[in-house]
Amino acid sequence: MRRGRFLVLMMILGIATFLCTVNLDAQPDDILLDDSEVFTSRSRPAVEFPHLRHFDDAGIECSECHHRFKDGENIVDEGELEEGSAGIKCSSCHKSEAGFRLEPDLDPTKRTLQQAYHRMCMSCHRQLKKENKTAGSVTCGGCHPKKKADQA
Ligand code: HEC
Ligand code: HEC
Ligand code: HEC
Ligand code: HEC
Image (tube, rainbow, N blue to C red; front, side, top):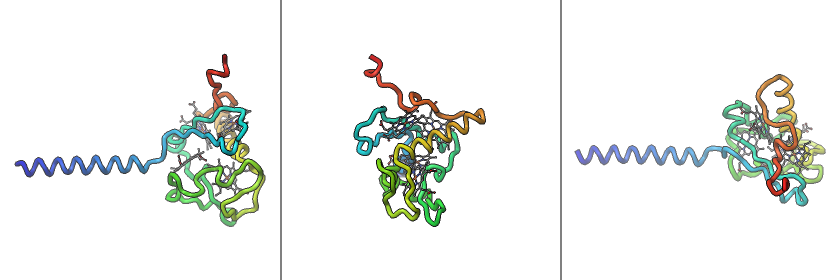
């Protein structure tokens, strides 16, 4: 009897530990996009980005946003997209000045970090709005909300 209870307890503990581990491995739900080390004299507030909603609710593939190119093809693999891994940050390739780092296989293009974000975020939102679908903001204030201090 006691032994049975102990086993059940161990099982519950095991499952709880498993769930916690899975949860720790999960992608962050919301990310504050704040590349202040690149935008040293920034003019807009950082951007609150609901990461999870994009691939969970909206069903967008990881590789629509994350990329690593080889011979002109995006060969990024979902398994390499982990918190803290090299090249996960857009700023590891897109810099404040035009040009890329991190062993680019492609000719460097002229996409600075700001252009990279804007082009990716806004063009999708714009396109979806055109098709009358749910999308995120296309206005400056929608992504860069005014801080209370600015309104005073
Ligand atoms: C709509 C675009 C978009 C989609 C879809 C997307 N991501 Fe992201 N992800 C981003 C952006 C933007 C960042 C922030 C990068 C930065 O900080 O430079 C990010 C960051 C991350 C990070 C790093 C988080 C951190 O805080 O270090 C991981 C891990 C990640 N994504 C994994 C994934 C995986 C796995 C998928 C698919 C299941 C996915 N992403 C789908 C845009 C996207
Ligand atoms: C490993 C390096 C690397 C990382 C990390 C990276 N990019 Fe890129 N990105 C590139 C390269 C190289 C190109 C050029 C592709 C080409 O010329 O076709 C590119 C192209 C783009 C383009 C297309 C530009 C255009 O003119 O069509 C956008 C938008 C973009 N990146 C946004 C992002 C965003 C947002 C992130 C972070 C989620 C990110 N990139 C992360 C290397 C990277
Ligand atoms: C491939 C298409 C796509 C890309 C790329 C994309 N988004 Fe979105 N975004 C969506 C869709 C679809 C929604 C609506 C999600 C939902 O609620 O179901 C959304 C919603 C949002 C919202 C929530 C708006 C609200 O009403 O609460 C924000 C904020 C946002 N996006 C910011 C961004 C930022 C910042 C980027 C670039 C790093 C980005 N998005 C890239 C498609 C995209
Ligand atoms: C769909 C979301 C979105 C929209 C709409 C948007 N931006 Fe951004 N913008 C971003 C993201 C994401 C960054 C990168 C922020 C970071 O990583 O610090 C950024 C960066 C910037 C930067 C560079 C950082 C700084 O503070 O100097 C400027 C300037 C900027 N945006 C201005 C604008 C203006 C002006 C508009 C309207 C025409 C606009 N943005 C619309 C998402 C958006």
